[in-house]
Figure 1: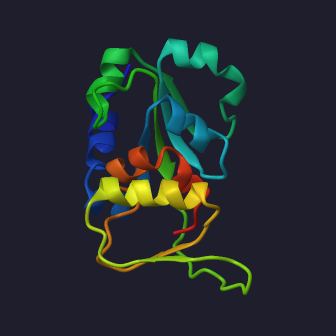
Figure 2 (figure 1 turned 180 degrees about the vertical axis):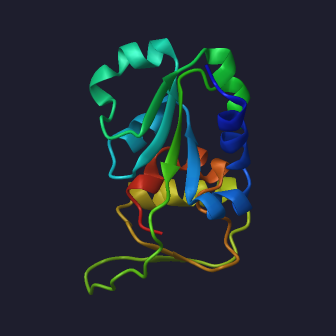
Length: 161
């Protein structure tokens, strides 16, 4: 069962201030959670439905700090998306570091992209074209915003921003 403290913590991560303070962000939905499970991101909490657990037993990461099976209705209340009926993960942010500039690699430079959905789409497109490094200005939307994560469709894992 979900405690009020856990619900409050997960809901607080919808705001940039608390994401920055806790150094965590939320990943919602079957595809995105499966992507983050197969990555080198540290998963603090994984909340999933019994169906998701049964269908994806092999993909579940044993290094996940906390795993909890919840009802689909509880899961839908927690996140931004009411259609999420599979899983939700609280993931630790990676430290922001300057990219190494190699002669044979491509970089995408972004300035003042304010719409989170557009930023997620740009990340997904860069991943598709094999551009794995993005440099973004301070005015660009928060890369850990829920809409950025959702619209990147898991590409945020493969692209260094």
